[in-house]
Length: 425
Image (cartoon, rainbow, N blue to C red; front, side, top):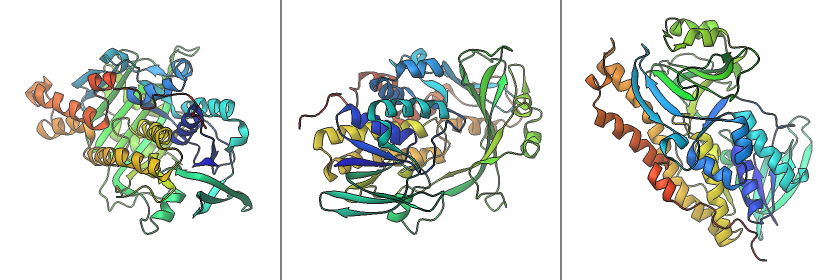
């Protein structure tokens, strides 16, 4: 029997490609009628890029993504707080890529269709029920558009890669309720604009209450000499604020948040200009879920946002899903398509991602901006008058340690899946 994967996002498709790499049959089930390259920009960190390169995707990533050169933090006045090299420029053996999320998913989808065959990537298949059977698991699916039965499929294992609103997690934890909103709203968009700083810089400016993030996601300029700049504007509200929290992909109303950033015109970046010139912006509540003490229930387990949804802080959401997929694959290579493989995967990944979820709630490495705001709200001349160099370095290094991408440690670490050949038998 095959491995059933619920969800055709970045995590699910990476898992499918990884299982194919080791000769394990699998099938992906996606709820939507058609997988489209939707979304905005994301960053894929070196430890996750390494795993995608192991899957033979380097050239496509390099063709479409920007090799992130540096990450820089600034105050709300545009004054530098902390700057660190990223990817190859930081000494990693693998780049960090800034890329459109939809393009990354399309790269994975194209590879999955080519390698697994289109018949093993099933759309309009929304999971409604599953149960353990002799030797595996049985899953029932419907077409959400028509309401018609989409079939019953048996497999050795069922992997939930179906996101923060996971149907499988809901069945395992029926009393959990909706994702937890922390009072923050994100407005996200992509604007054609001029290059800034190094041309490959990811910046974060502001503090916990009001923040702006942006980075380029196109390598070459368009006919007008402009690049695609991905940006995120963020505002924290009181948690009792009556915001529109029920929709996670709503078109943004720019006039509702632009006034808070109207004077953020720095000599190196025009923040209000980016917002005003954006053709389509979207509004998202910043949500996650409390970590749970169990992912694996017999032949069923959770991965990615179904297992550990976290705030998009530190560029770790997609990267952690990729690491999940590769760890599951390694354990299946070792233990076969068994419950023991899922339990070994969980034993490694659940503690690690729990720490990351909790650290992101404390703003991860972005806490340097909040410390500056608290200590010098009126501004500063030199950041070390506000934060010591040791504080800055400790915050950055601790996050890399928890997230698993310290330079020396990662460069010395063997690949997660070390035998990319079909298993005997």
